Each structure stands twice: as structure tokens, then as C-alpha cells.
Length: 99
Image 1 (tube, helix red, strand yellow):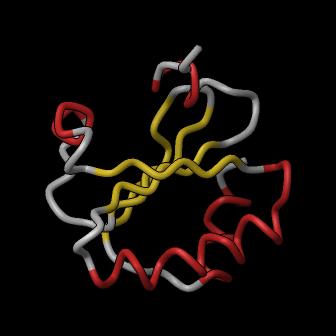
Image 2 (cartoon, helix red, strand yellow):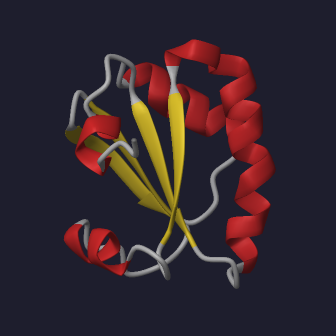
Image 3 (cartoon, one colour):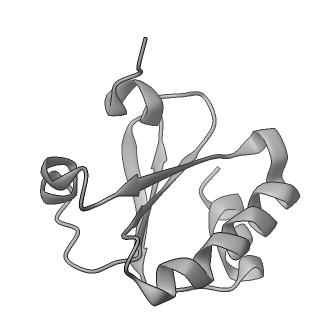
């Protein structure tokens, strides 16, 4: 059974959603950065990638106008968002500040 987006973002741990597109250069740069963040935070963070071309209604709902856009959810509430590429240590600090 496939989880709904709402089920995914209302987990006990913060959920970082990466809205991306396959054709987006900066999105490709962000992928290894997100892997570093996940490696550092482990089970304290869930990372979900959403392809805006395949999930246009979801991208529209969250007013994603550019990719990559990252949105951090805590128990279903949006607590932070940023468009563009951030460094791993900056992302880790932001996530820790919002835990």
C-alpha cells in the first residue's frame, strides 16, 4: 500500500521533502548533499524526494515555483523551506534547530 503524502509528513521525526526535477542541474548537485545529511542524522530525519513533473498537484499545493525546493515538515507542519542548493553542514544545522 502506498502511503499518502500527508501520512509521510506527519511522522514522529522531521521530514525533509526535496522537490526536484530530472532536468534540473542544481537538483543533481543536491542529491549527494542530502545523502551526507542523512548519513549524519540517521534515523532522526526522513528525506523524501518528489519529482515536480510527476507530482504537479503536490508542487502546486506547496507553491513550489523553482527546483530544487526543500521543505522541512515537523508532525505535518511546514517549519522551514528554501529554494536552491545548501551545503550539508548548513542543512544539518537547520534541521537540528527545528527538531
